[in-house]
Length: 529
Length: 76
Image (cartoon, rainbow over all chains, first blue to last red; front, side, top):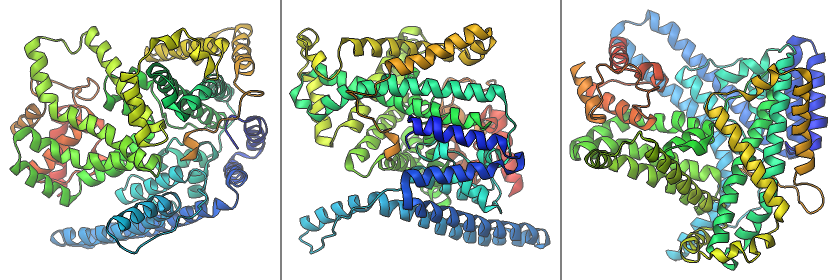
């Protein structure tokens, strides 16, 4: 059930909202849980069993952890001070074992369902190279909806209980609802237990403001998805299907339009799901913050898919960097290497794992590993050469806070991000390199005038809609960047103006949406992870 | 405190860490620099910093970082 379908918006969401608000407040969580399981079953059928395994495993392991922590708290008071450290270490070992069990179950399932064929293919290649007689047959494995999302949220819950960020929940329904909540299970945003579980469980009173603001956000998300993303999809598909048939300029256009597509689509999906949750009075965390205004690639990743970045930081970067063995290793590295490098290398090691995980999380292929490594190399080089750049800019008296330099940084980030998008969308690594090469070597401006652009699946009217839609998106982003809340401003207008704006937005989606004859329904890209 | 200021100045030369009171909001320390700093603090001061301690309030100024180190040492 796609978030942009009539079935979801009119039937499913409409009915869920109606049932939610007519049910007594204290029982409203039941409607959310039922709706979430119905949504999952309609979308993924019997594969719900994997979601249930994840839910039960983290629930039980959470309780187990909670028991260990409670036991420690009560034993601590009666333990002499000098014995407390030994007790704490013993308890930590037991807690780690429980976390290990929970992660093994959850990541084990994810590894099997999503990565089995990838590992099998690679083992077969290695075995062939080494003349070993090992051959693993590929399997047709159906991937449960949202497994990459709910697995990370389940792992996050267990690690948060381990760290003491939240308490183990005794209520299995609350854990089940947190993992299955229908607005976030398909594409995120990644929620944290302490931030969301309570909100989902408490019944929210109907609020006209939350309800209408949520509905507006859904319309805005639909605009980005149906008017922009689905329209450019035709050109993107055409160019990426046979890039060698086109000149560098057309390939460049295909890459730029893919960047526009994935941003409009993913951020649009986030608007739809955040708006859906808001209509129930539930606030989901932000996943995008105008990423294309970033001055550096690191900043881009703090503003693009923010909750994935936060998950990777909190659960991989921190877990590795702050572990005892790693601190010892850092000490060793520092003593062996020169001052600056010695300081940076201990950050570069866990950062490598972060980007490897990030790449593989996006998909089971070497292309995604390259995608992760591409960003890792950019960030690592940036960190290693920063002292050199600082000295160079100081010597050349270049003001790094001046407008010209900031503008250059924006352009540089845009270029680097587009190369990343090219790697991400290209059918395979080899094609990504050849496309990149063609942009620089086969750049033929004639494509602008010889009608090629009109043979890619979009006519002049489509380009006009994309241009106008892009300007609207840019204008909204610029206003938000300056702290202007569009929805608050519209809400201040009188009823006639307000509804004129609402109808204009709804009709823009209906009239200019890329659906119906000539358009195939386009699945959300991130829903396939 | 002197040792901490030395580490900070080494990490980001040219910043007056004794006076700066919002290293995060003012964009002086990025998240990766904070991570480099945290590893430095662990190795130099022999302390264990919990991921829960890595929040902006604990890293907004040299004083806040020093208070964090002192608290962790006292807890040990």
